Image 1 (cartoon, rainbow, N blue to C red):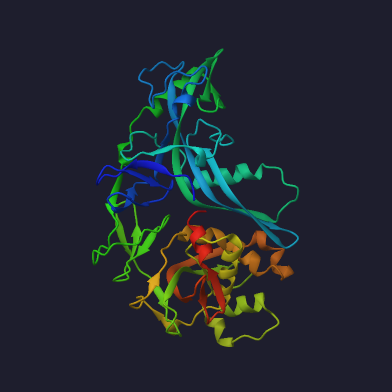
Image 2: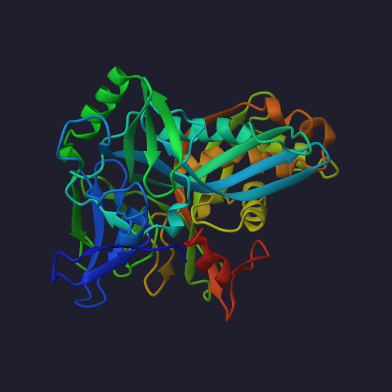
Length: 436
């Protein structure tokens, strides 16, 4: 599991540990279950230990410099921490992937090529509950992902890909201490923990940076809210990194938002077997593949498997991509996306409420992340269709309506099985998905 950050439980004062970027936590002492409602993403501050701050040339560390002198001032600089996956679609019909754990400056005055100098997984982080420790970012979350992708592309690869796709899955802001030091006629910005220099600027720019990092942004206050169903007051499940959780009693789906709970509409596929009592969430996305001139289910099936004859009635069926709304390893994620997209369910077996005596997994992968993955999904689907695969980098995907659908599975000792589609999902793969 990822490194944990610490803060005091507001209910009893005991020490609470959470995964950085995770909205949900449970106090092990008083058993209080809560989620962290915050405008934007969660913010953390890194305070080095005594040995680090006492390195040669470092004074005793304090999160804020109380004086306004530029030389030798200690400032807090926010960095975006982005964890996700990078896919590389290769000309030899292979799809390579790797985990991304990247930090990128959140201020315009710091060049995007710089990083924090160390992974957030090795730091002792403190959650900024009151919004008065971490300066507000000047670069938003989407731009940070684009800059990260741009920086990754500058890396030297041994082989050229058809296209790369970076999918950011967990975002948070981490503020780290830096020292301003005069160097001739300029000022350098130096990490007091690693000694790495991330910027050199003139006196005027240094003063502007110092002033900006001293402002207080209390609109980013984080509020722990009880993790209970807003309809029936039942305790909601503690599933780490979840963005929407489903009540195990009344089966209402609640989206965890900045302002609180928001009721979320969903659908479910009715099980054909009584033993299919566990449900996994998927994103049901209406699409049109512009460059491929694929706009119906019939077009897709013919393109993916041209050696078979398909139902002519499918020419009027809206084309949809169905991808998991929970996290898995990339290979299994693509396999499930292909199977469910090609073997789409019929509209007459859709309901709008899970049955009693069933259980369901929370939503962990957002709709935006699912959309980011679509190009990779279709690259994998057409990997044996040369005409389509060679043109995948030019593929334009138009997005329509997006729904949430829960599909039924039966639970065995080590896996979840859907007999209708003849596909299984290892339970360990789902468990590890919350740690990626």
